[in-house]
Length: 635
Image (cartoon, rainbow, N blue to C red; front, side, top):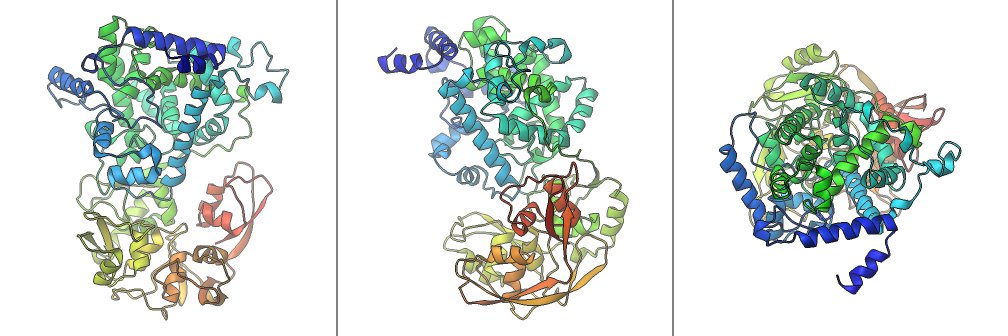
């Protein structure tokens, strides 16, 4: 051990020192050539997981294929590892990608060519920030910090037992729960530095747990496995990690397809709560049968079955804690199991640990309807009696502005009790009005501007439909959606933060650039079929420093509307003194008084707007609201 490492180790608290020296000693004793080691050594957290792996990991896959005969019956083990740190991360390293040093979204685009949606951005950035907080917590050895309850409730949280360990009863759990220094460390993290993240996870938990409980009960698996989803994604369907894992259960693409999920240009079922839960249950059930231990099953879910296989064979034990002490796993897997146990202990009694006053989300209830053809999301939303934003939130598996056109067992979710009316409404929509688009693959020398000109659509519409924030960042081979037959405006509006409004151009018009095209009336997108009040024209003079998006939010309209009404092709090119025509619905504003149990997202859904709208209209910096608060909303 070098003097520098020794000094760093001695700087840690005594508990962390003991763990550090124990692991260092174990790894030194078990060091071997890479070809004999079952995987990479050293830190393997989400913030460092995209690193070159040993070539032996490829041997793991080969061993698995030889053992199971490759891809076999549904009950057999898929050959691909769950997380993809071993295969995919090696490929990324070979290609020269260094995502940890750049933007998370640069990385995501590099891996799958996926442009982030409005839902994916906050959820994925939250996951990334939480992983960074974990990494910092472990490095700084902050395990000795007392919980917040020691200060908020000093009588209830005695200095001798601030984590209420004496009250933890392993018999109340249906997973194996133990208390040791590793579990205690993670309990301190969740009640200390990680408290804000755990609070958000609890608030989201009630949206998905009832469905998970039903499926786990049906499969005969422990209900407390819901905490695996909690530590994986924080119950966020759009969470996208730097390991290229997605959804509530954080599957990578190869493993998702092996376990029956569809992941392609049109659909990503890793984001669908039910489909991904079914796959996770099948995978976890298989791992538990294989290893005969839930602790090892979780370790395999995190690090790969082959890694666990080799660890068990090398050290001659199926005791997870003994394998940890022997240095058999990477640091991330060492921490994964105690982290899950700690999350479950706190989750059984959140109030005991100071998690009170939370805004729990209502259960996600819906009906599932088969849709085996391409239909635009605005049409689907209208038939379901929903806003486009609410429809997208209920259908996170749909990656594009339309359902898949290939007829491969497509489906959509609609609100409870609306399945029959949805089917009836969709049947009435003529085939030529269900979708209108063209796919274009970018060729060498093309720019977004030349492509827009070629198809006679505006650059702004092309950017919004394809979720491209920087028009200069278009790569050769990238596939773009080109709205056609007058659908450009409607499709572009679908990707705004608020519900879409009808296109103002006629159906036969291929372009929506005309500045003279102004709405005579605005029609509801909620599927009621009723017309709303006529629009009133307002002239706005742009002030210095004003952005088009801010102007649109001020008047409760979409940026796409303002651009269309004023013939603006680039939202960034508005000048001080410029006069803009704004068309507002008359008597559209109302004041909502927040009631007990309401969330901003629930209020937004009630009035057919977005959370971003409410925050903008009321100059709110966060999405937190309180009982009795008055918020201005636009119907």
